[in-house]
Length: 157
Image (cartoon, rainbow, N blue to C red; front, top):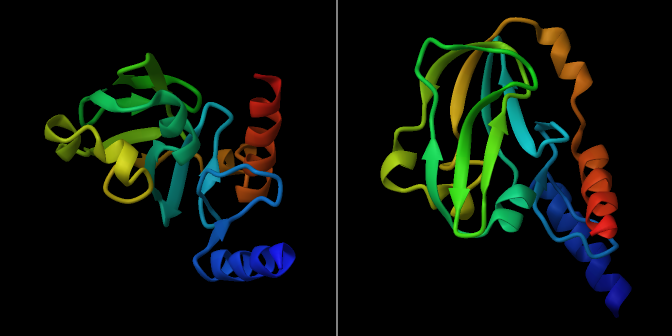
């Protein structure tokens, strides 16, 4: 019975483009995104990228109460901190998974920072960037590698 349920949930997850681990890792990881080891995601569309923090990151942070946003027009480099997320538990830097120029920031986060918790991949995005070097995407993890990375990281703690 349990294996049939797992198989059905895996088929459903595949339909929704998300990864579901068989080993207890419960965060949502979307298949069409790329991931940094600092727990940011990036969605590439042409020469533009949308960036946010992952479901896994927001789960570990707890309730987000403030998001520090960069200025529009700022240049960012892959791996560089461009802002911060403050939660009831901690403050954490946000690093950009891809280099470029900030085209837009999610102003809704100023009024509703909890969007990072409730909708990390949709309404809780943080910045949109014009990409400088599309080759940098190759340095990022796909959904399967990111899921495995999170499982291994969680096992250490």
